[in-house]
Amino acid sequence: MLLIGSHVSFRSGDQLVGSVKEAISYGSNTFMFYTGAPQNTKRCEIKEKLTNEALEIMKENGIDIKNVIVHAPYIINLANNENKEKYSFSISFLKEEIKRVEKFGVEKLVLHPGSYTTQNIDTGINNIINALNEIITPDQNVKICIETMAGKGTEVCFKLEHVKRILDGVKHGDKLMVCIDTCHLNDAGYDMKKFDEFLKEFDNVIGIEKIGCVHVNDSKNPIGAHKDRHENLGYGTIGFDSLINIIYNEKLQNVPKILETPYVCKEGGKDRSYAPYKFEIEEIRNKKFNNNLYKDIRDFYEK
Image 1 (cartoon, rainbow, N blue to C red):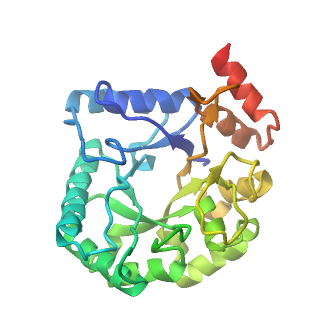
Image 2: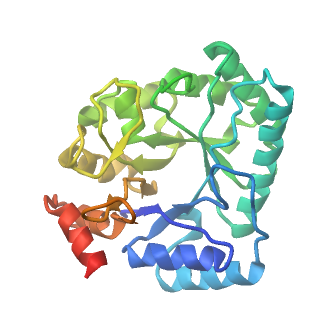
């Protein structure tokens, strides 16, 4: 079964109800959201009534909460422990985020592993392991999906071996999975045009059963650029056909695929931008590239 969706908004007013309705408007049968702004600590109280209403809407529209993804905020950095206060904050904040995710019944939480900044990569990996050993409990339902990164700056986990070390070092490793991001992998140096070869390598290093989520993005950059700049499907260096091959790969058929492609700016200015997901999901379902994507999006939203 094709599980395809995108990042959607989550607002304090309608919470998960708004997220679900937005996903449905794109033709999705899964989606990903942040429980608050990814760049700050502000979090609203989760209202059980709204969550239950959302779950009913999902049931009516064939969306299984088990296929829904939450993304942890970017402000969490488990890879650097030089500033003990900031490191402790990241640990405590992720603990609380796991509790929030469990209130929704969501079972997968994607996490950017962090950047080692002033330290070194080995120390960074060990910091992540130590933090996760403090955070993860054996009775939690949420699986933390370590995201593969592009290797921008001092990011950790731009190599599969980094992820493997974390999985092996965490006591409750059964609570960990992996989120593979096609743009990040391309920019890290993995050839997404030879995805079967990549999957074979992933299986040898980590085990394909550990893939819990796929972020589907084209890339503005050549392979190995270590820059992390997402592009709309077919408009980047990975290409539409290669991304379709990834999305429909039979080994990942039950894994949620999530679009994080860029919004399209209003014609003639940048004062407004439009979500491309309705159109890209249509492309994916039809397996047909839309070379008028930007025009079609603008025409739809500006009519």
